[in-house]
Figure (cartoon, rainbow, N blue to C red):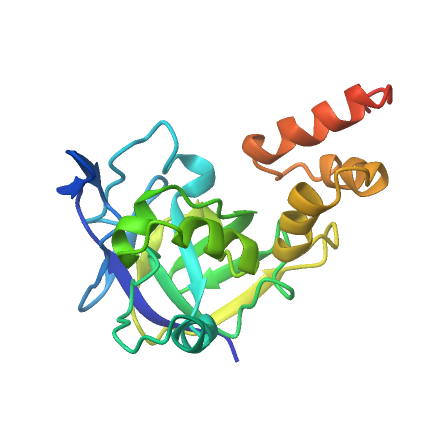
Length: 219
């Protein structure tokens, strides 16, 4: 059963980083009650750097709660709380090898579409207190995924999650992550990914470049 365990939000704040300060919205905390999910973000939530975070294809970020236990064992830590990985939605029953790019879900009163895996920046290292964590996070394949908002609506902890549309292109979140970072010669699946009309631009461009370099015309 798929379920929304926690809705997490934060406004950007200044935090120390090396010999300077940076602005980040990664310190998400659980929100009580119901919150409006809008086209670009949750009410009460904002991205510090809109050039790389947020936008239509990254309106909200979901992370599977099942990974909390794995990371706890991996890192030998028990200090995790909802929103630990900078996610807006802590979800249950939505692992990356089952969720597909283009899947559409009803979450509370909202309707959302899965667009891409997450590629972490250095700020999750700040959140975790571990400079090498972004690399460990990415290598784990436990990336979570971004959502595009098709219908705005209120969401809240405890909401059930229903898949409205699935299996459109048969490329899972984990499959796209693996294709992009571990299968540079896989041109067939690159073409398959490019056929997805809902593939986010950040992931479309590298796939197009792969085919162009191989001398394969784009469809």
